[in-house]
Amino acid sequence: MAYMGTMLRVNLTAGTIKRENTPLDLAKKYVGGRGLATRMLTNEIDPTVDPLSPENKLIFATGPLTNTNAPTGGRYMVVTKGPLTGGIASSNSGGEWGAFLKKAGYDMIIFEGKSPKPVYLSVMGDDVQIKDAAHVWGKRVPETTDILIEESGEKKAKVSCIGPAGENLVYFAAIMNEKHRAAGRTGVGAVMGSKNLKAVVVHGDKKSPIPDQDAFREIVRGKITKIKENGITGEGLPKLGTKVLDNIINENGMYPSRNFQDVMYDGTSHMSGEALIEKGYLKRNSGCYMCPIACARDVELPNGRRGEGPEYETGWAFGPMLGFHDLNVICDANFLCNDLGLDTISAGVTLACAMEMYEKGFIKKEELELGPELTFGTSEALPFYLKKMAYREGIGDKMAQGSFRMATEYGCPEFSMTCKKQELPAYDPRGVQGMGMSYATGNRGGDHVRSYLISPEILGAPEKLDPQAIEGKMKWLFIFQNLTAVIDSSGLCLFTSFALGLDDYRDMINAATGFDLTSEEWMEVGERIWNMERNFNLLAGIGPETDTLPKRFFTEPANRGPNKGKLHRLPEMLPEYYQIRGWNADGTMPKQKLEALGL
Image (cartoon, rainbow, N blue to C red; front, side, top):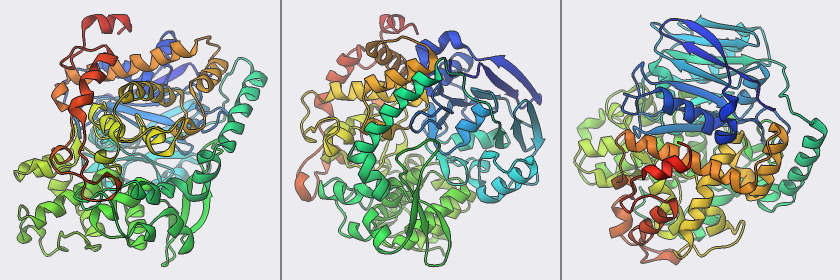
C-alpha cells in the first residue's frame, strides 16, 4: 500500500537503533510525511520543551507517493519543534534523498536524545549503523557529502547533512541534501546540530508496494499530461524557474526591497529569470526525483563556479531586499548558504533588518569590527556577514538568532519583518491581502508554501482573484491551507498544484495506498493536520496574539506602484478566518473542534 511498513527509531544518547512498524492504522487520518510525523511528534514530546534540548525529537518522514512515479514523487519532510519560532517546525525538501530512504526500506526515522560525540547514521538497506563523524564535523556541506558517499561504498548513495550553521546552532540553519537541496525553514538544521548528528546517508533499491501498478501508472500518466499542458508548470517554470516571478511580482507592486521600506525595485530586470539566461549564467534546467517540471537552475558564474539556483526567494533576499541587483553576488551568496547550511530567506531578511537598524543608528559602526558597512546597496556585506552568521562571530552571533531576537535586543522589534519570529518571504502583504493573511495565520510563521495564495491572486490559478479584495478570501485561505497539508503529507511538490486539483491528488493517493477516501474526506485530513499543528503551538505558548503582521504593514502605506497608499486589512479578515476554522472568536480552539477531528 505504498508504505514500506517499517521505520527506524534512533536513540542517540544510548546509541541504539530499533525497527518499528509504521503506524499504518493512522495513515488514513494523517497520510504520511508532514501529517503522520507531526502526529507522532506531538504525541511524544512536551510542547514546552526546549527545541535544542535532548528531549526534543527530530523526524525525517516520507509520504506514500515518495519513491513512486507520481509527478515529483521524491519529497520528504523534517518535523520537530523549531528554535526560530518555538513552535511546530516542518520543513520540506526535494531532490532524491526522500526516495532513497524508502528504497532503503523505511518510511521515516525518529531521532531521540543527543549523542555524546558527533555521529552520522548510515542506512544501507538492512544495514543500519551509527558511525563516528569527527572527521566531517566542521566541514561544509559539499565536502561532507563527498566524503560520506565514498565511505558508504555506494556511488548512488544520498546524503542529508548539516553544515557549520547547524553545528553552531544558528536558529535558521537548514538541512541540505545532495549539496543544494534544502529543508530550509524553521531551523531544523539547528535541532540536528544540537543532537550532534552530522548526516544521514541512505541507499537501497526497494520499490514501494503499490496494490495495482498498472492502474496507478495510468492515473499518473494523466496527471503528468495535465502538468505538461499547464502554462505555469509546462512552460513558465521549465523556461525561467521560480525566478519567472521577479518581473511579474514587481509589476504588481508587491516586490519588497530595503527591508520592506519600498514595495518595488527598479533594478529587477537585471537579476530576473530572464537575466540569468541573457547574461549566460544558465547552463541547463534540472529537476528532482520523478519531476516533469524541472524548474531548478544549473548556473555557472563568470569565475567558473557552478551550482544550482538561485530560486526566486533567494534572488530577492540577496538582492532587492538588500538594495542591489548584482547577479554574480546573488548567485555566489546562494552557493555559500548551501555550503554553510543556511536558510536563504531568513539570512537575507535578517541582514536587511540589520541594515535598517544600522542606517537608523541602532547598530553602531564599532560593532562591525572593521567589516563592510551595513548600508543598503553594499554588496560586499552579503558574503561577509553570511559567514559571520554561520560561525556566530561578532555581530553575526546576534544575527544567528534571527531578526526578531536581534532587533528586540536593540529595542527596535518593529524593524523585524517576521511573523511568529520567522522572516517573511518575497511578497509584500500591502499588495496581496490573502497572502498576507497566510503569513499571519501560518503555523510555521512567515511562510509562503503552506498556502500559496499568490496562485489565484496574481497568477490566476485556478481562477483569478483581485489581490486587494477581501470578500471570500478567508474561504480560499482555509482551502489552500488544508490542501497543502495533504500535498506535503503525500510526498509531492507544491508546484504540482498549479496544474492539479484536489481530485487529482485523491486519485493518486487512493491508487497508491488502496484507500477509498473521497475528495471531501481528504480535505478533512488536511484540516486535521492544520488543527493539530495549531494546537501544538497553542500548548507551546504561541497564542492567537501572534496571528498578525509587522506594524509596518498597518501604518506605512505602499509608497508607489499599483498599490500606492494601500495597507493590509488583517483586522477585517481575521474574525472571519477564525469563524471558518470553527475556532473561538479569540482564536483559541474549542474542545469540540478537537474531538470532531479526532485529535
